[in-house]
Length: 222
Ligand code: C5P
Image 1 (spheres, helix red, strand yellow):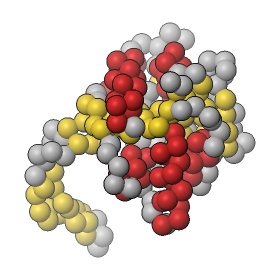
Image 2 (cartoon, protein in one colour; image 1 turned 45 degrees about the vertical axis):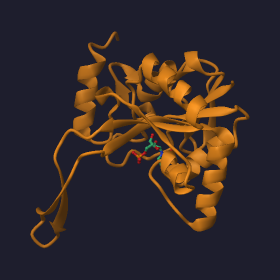
Image 3 (cartoon, protein in one colour; image 1 turned 180 degrees about the vertical axis):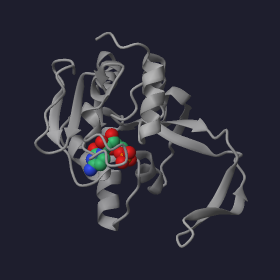
């Protein structure tokens, strides 16, 4: 079976405050270099969605194709899907640099079995529904939420390409938005297999995440 890795990296990186995340470096390498190097050995092609006017960081391996992304992550993925003919696709956020070969291979096996799968991590912390009081600029406990059977969704997510394209078209027609692709496929009533992930697959979103990522990356070579 043929696989493409599709990397949405067209966000503006507002929460991190360091410009578009694709070019942000961790351990002396760009986030995109980390992500593409983890995926490239396992797939026939890698396609990256970038913000308009931006080109690939110089440390990304040769052969990676680029497109201009859309206004939302969902739009960027829809455009990436139009840029490949591969039978199966692995969608991976550029913002998750520490992706192991074991997880990529576990995902490829799951996609062949189930047509749709995502990496996910069983929730370890206690969970609560909170309420933000904007006047006081404080948050308060409303109600505890049982964490049994709750998983936090990570990427990569894998799909038979035509299934995910159908799910995107259906979501667009319905005006349904989700923060990930597996959510669009689950919305169709289709099975989505959960493959147990890894704490190291965390998303570099806020400034504190960058410090954690630097620690994981180890000393920079440059
Ligand atoms: O905003 P969030 O952290 O959910 O973004 C997840 C991924 O989606 C990031 O890698 C980001 O660059 C990408 N994205 C995109 N196009 C957008 C917005 C976000 O490719 N318009």
